[in-house]
Length: 109
Image 1 (cartoon, one colour):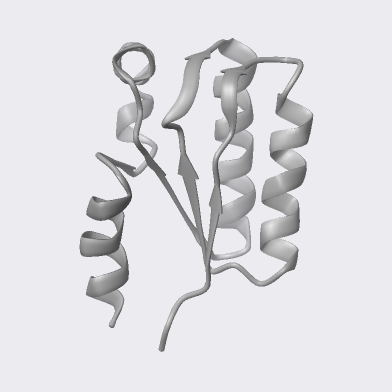
Image 2: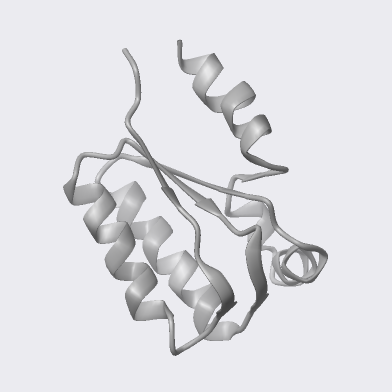
């Protein structure tokens, strides 16, 4: 059984000005039938507290409908934020899309 993956790739700074748009993208991905939501943060330079909160909210929404969410391609600043807030224990963080494909997609086949 193959999984339907929706890749979201926000850019710039994930802060209060972008969280509503980000949440909407996740809602649309779930409504379209995505089994897995991959949030690729390679183009994110900074995440503030509202951005981190939005990630937690969308993770809860994804889990509430029995789907999965992964995060990949985090920079050093975001990695440090995740470690300081223990969010690295909450989110499934992968190095990049290649690791996602190897560990998640290939494992599902």
